[in-house]
Amino acid sequence: MSGDEECTRGDLLTRALAGERAAFAALVRQHQRSVYSLALRMLSDRHAAEDLAQEVFLQLYRSLSAVSSEAHLGFWLRRVTMHRAIDRLRRAPRLESRAEELAAVVSETEPADPLLQRRLRALLRELPAAARAVVLLRYQEDLDPVDIARTLRMPLNTVKSHLRRSLAQLRERFDETADALT
Amino acid sequence: MSEDVENNEELERRLRSALRAVDPGEGFAPRVLARIAAEPAHATRPARAGAVASWLAFGLAACVVLAVLLAHEWQARRLEQGREARRQLIEALRVTDEKLDLAYRAVNTHGSGAPAEHSGV
Image (cartoon, rainbow over all chains, first blue to last red; front, side):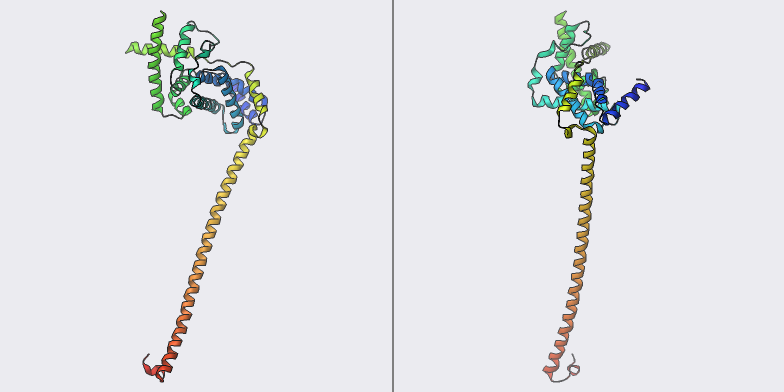
């Protein structure tokens, strides 16, 4: 990221804090992919994901004064999104089982083996919410375990344990699928 | 062992690919702004919300300090009142002692018909 871009982003935050709606809209556009994707992959439901993502940005608008920098903003958005998603799953576990949507949740650039990619996403939904959150932050947001622990307010060893067990489970189930397809 | 590592790397590569971020679409930001606009102003104004929270915290802290000072003042007054009561009690006891002493002398004087000095008291 260039210095100018960093400056512009910081500037956006300041302007949004001053009440400038256009600056806040620009912040939303910058972070909407990340927030929406996390919500979508946690809830497996487009409408619920859109609603949750909107709520997160609404909460951001109310709490802008608590955000100190662009880096803090990213951290804040991921933390609020994941906690809200886990909270929703706890209150409405039926969202977990909605089989969906799976076909509709396709990356914009469809990968070479879409069937396996979809299967992998389906397997991800079978993980418990906390483990899924850890895997998403690791492989979608590219966070390291320390940052994941901070984001989810989880002990570092728990994060590592979730990652290890989830990868083992995903690999086992994925290999079965791949074998069946070949 | 190295096969395991390779398998994990392959799985991680596939995960990163499968979990690429999805955009909610161009209309998302306007929908967020519309939702903000639909909320009551006092609930969404960012700077004011922070300022209100700051003032509330300041007010609460001021109340706590005031309460501590009042409690301290009240306790100091009670101590002072206690000291004053003790002083008055001692004074009253001293006066009573003097009166009793006088009464005792008077009784002795009249009872023996002789001056108290001769009764040996």
